[in-house]
Length: 352
Image (cartoon, rainbow, N blue to C red; front, side):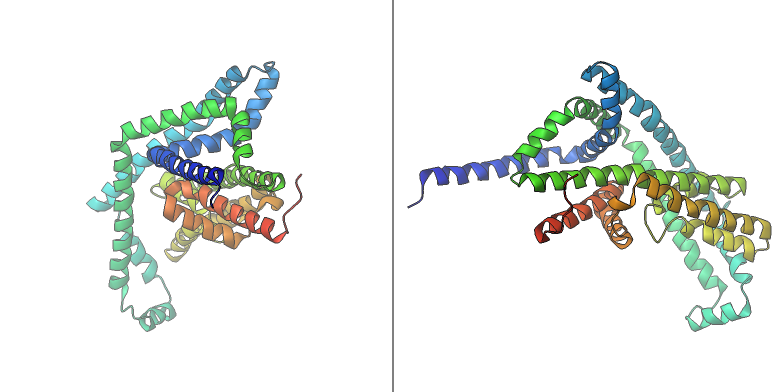
């Protein structure tokens, strides 16, 4: 015979699951704002604590000051870059559409400069001539630029939604900074796991979030800035756009910004612009390429890093499923996956 208390407990657990799922469903329209509110709170919590110590424990004032610093030092500069990027993408697409910017011609010049052996190789691969290559390349570039321009226009048209999400993020960030410690303690007590397991998983969660945003984003920003700067110096069209693309590619290990600057350097060399090609190749290899090797170990730390192949797969998978937010969500899920299996197999690290 079923114990009445056990039956009540099962009903209560079912109700708990139901209302939790309903609450998550309710928050889904603003998950991006909530996600970045939590991420920024984790990143800037040490600053909030430092300010609170200087202000004799005045949590509300220190949270407000931290929020203002985040707004003026992080969000406003990023908003300015995003606005300039949208304008540049739209202008670039219009230049391609009007014929003022002809990537097909550039590609034709590069292919024409190839040695005869390369042309024979293209024939063996079933590509009969320059015209076919030019058509394929032009279609690829036009499609990509049209997609970017469409996305840029969508961002501009969804201004109201963006402002609402932005305000929610700032509002949530303030309260997470002020009350985040108490809230995390309540969540920690509610998790039905052993104390050591909770400590290990929460430590891994915090470490990966901070390492991903602080380290990977900083490296990507520096590499993208350097790439855009050298493109601007060499007179390449759309330097800001290419810099941003190089920054995004820098998030992916074993891929990186070289996917952008290396083809441009090769084009310069093939078309006789030897000085520009050599400068870009040397700058890309020695300056942009070395940023990852120098900054990432300092900002991220070797002990917190996942294997490169796991970061690559989880980042690509995360961005496929969750969009831009996936570059944090993907590695975070991978890190929690590894941490949970380490706990299960008994190979977890001891709490620090």
